[in-house]
Length: 299
Image (cartoon, rainbow, N blue to C red):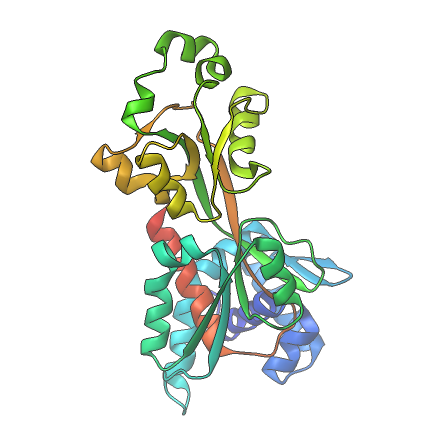
């Protein structure tokens, strides 16, 4: 079994994104850090990091290991520390408003109960990632894979998309034609979209039906919860993450129009700034979000 020291070093490298930054945090030399991670990789039997010009990138084995041991190692370090387990400071979090309201809020509230000031910012993934790279945010839950060199990201959870309609419109669809010609069978139904580019709807149509939707757009509203309410009220059909649509699907106020063999998924990422100064509250939040994701399974 790896020693606590090796796991501590591993987590510092994982969170900092480079050997040199981890060495600074641990107040040891970079060769010492390199030696410890080499010992851990030897014990585990496979590499944990891929060296890059910007630092290191965790392998899938490292992502799994960090998600399983992070909170436990932090707890042991806190218990052995003279400072005890108390938290403090401020965490600046960026995420979609709907995800924050429907999934992240309890995790953020737990951090607040432990004395951390939580500042949540909502917006599009690109804007939030830019704010993270510019040190205006500490952690971002991103709906797109970050490409900025200054950002270190790991897979968080998959969100599943569903095509929904109110029962009144679902009854107007010919089921046989829907199976044989889904685009034509759905073409008479109006759309409720998140934006004028039909980003979510268009992606679903292309993934499942092989082409853009020809449907007329009757509403554009940049809030997934408002889209659900508009669909339930009869304004049209739309595509939403399952976690947003689930309450209405359970109650029957909305129905799922199409059930593909493989559910269309989008991976969300947890992103932090590469080499950012140590912030224990950010570390705790990151690990608690990963634990929550394991409990959720998918969105």
